[in-house]
View 1 (tube, rainbow, N blue to C red):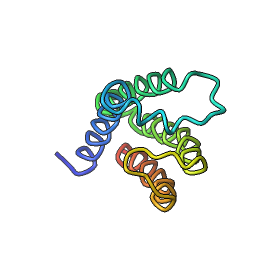
View 2: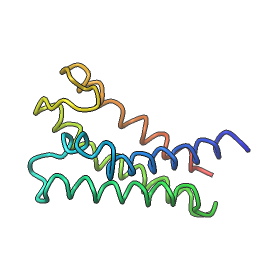
View 3: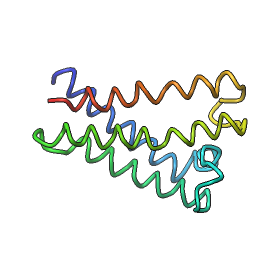
View 4: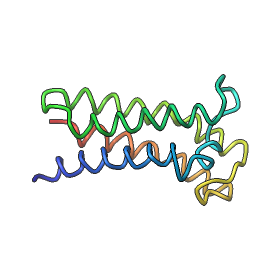
Length: 125
């Protein structure tokens, strides 16, 4: 198995695990990242995004080779779309996932770019 394939499968597993966390063990923690301007209940937003992550992770793993690049763009777009939640967590100083200082919350903002890169690179066939 080549490195790119391992990376793509790991990305899918990461998304599935995060999605499961949204629905179960980390549900309350993820609510800290939902901006107040989202017109849904925070718990509903967390559940819907968890379902989306499970579906995206599964699709990342099983998508046929000729569609993987498109799948990578979809996942990268998802990672970009959740950035406002990370910004809201920073601006509102909400503690969650060990992000209990301004510096840690700020540092988290810079994690979206590597996630987007991971999605694009691991699916670029």
